[in-house]
Image (cartoon, rainbow, N blue to C red; front, top):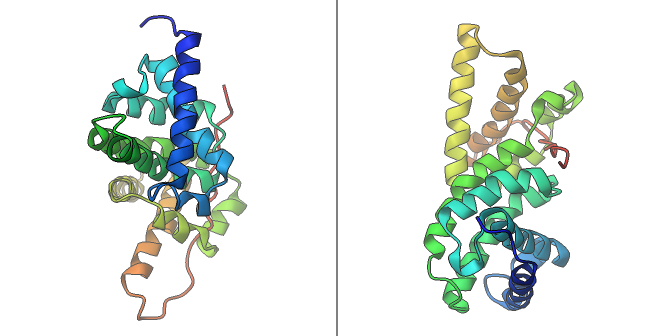
Length: 223
């Protein structure tokens, strides 16, 4: 890959700022003005744009599914400051932005491929930002008694939910067989807590005990 050009970086970021301003006013961008700060929207999109070029050599019109996966799975967990609220917004925001760039701006032509890659990469992003081995036992206790687990579940894509279920099944089997690694015990408890809300949501007509968890996501140190 060629050495990134500072002129190109400045050009694509200037274009991104123009597109973001239009995106915020569009039907695809307006919902995020209610759930995110304006600087957070800029932060995510410009970070994606810059990382796609400096890390993958791709300007926006040359973004590929692989570019999306690399940025979301590898770059974002290392270099973005991501708290719990922002984590659940990143992929939905980018999905709408990709759609906007193709259908409103006619700026790119492959939003479907980019969107699919973003959903797949989301599970990597969440996993990278969750480090339960560092959580104190008190936080795990919160997972059994809080409400944020349900909120987190509501923000989870169908693809990610399925992967969470698969991971839970594997960890549960390992626990039953006595082969579960100590560092995976907390992850099993977390998944159990979050997935319990799916049962709660499946039948709201029947009263259920207030269940599991305040999920707290711990950002990896910036490198």
